[in-house]
Length: 193
Image 1 (spheres, helix red, strand yellow):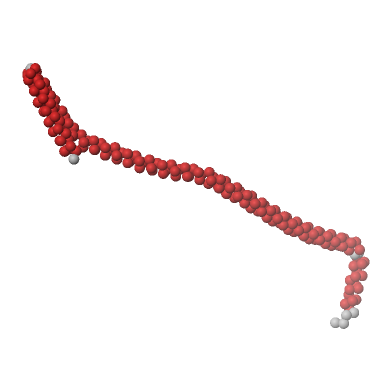
Image 2 (cartoon, helix red, strand yellow; image 1 turned 90 degrees about the vertical axis):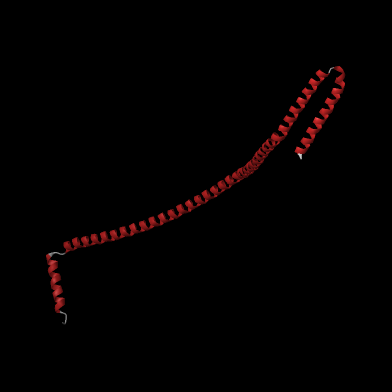
């Protein structure tokens, strides 16, 4: 379509130029034909060169312009896609940043609750350990008290036996010992067996 329009424009230009040249020839026939003929040949030469340049530009440049336009269009499409992706990443990062403060607050609250629970647990464990230590101390004191009473009874019994032995040794003279033995023998004789 463009080619035809270009061809028609070229033909129209040549026809108008030829008509202009013909009219100039009629007018110049009276003034000097040689100078006018040279001028006509210059214009014809210009028209041929201009037509050639227009034809070359019409033939060569449109594909290059089209290729360049396609390259620019592809670059714009790629840049648009990259911008859309960057905008999506930016929105995602902004969302994460907005949630970050909320998450930090939640983490702090969780840490606070856990630390309070840990304090309560440690206090309960300490109370339990105190009760166990107190019970163990009471049991140890009771055991020490029983051992001391037993030792005291043993000591008292030993002292009693020693005291009785020394008292008996004082009171048991050889005369008393003889009396005791003779009484024991009499009691045996009195028995009926």
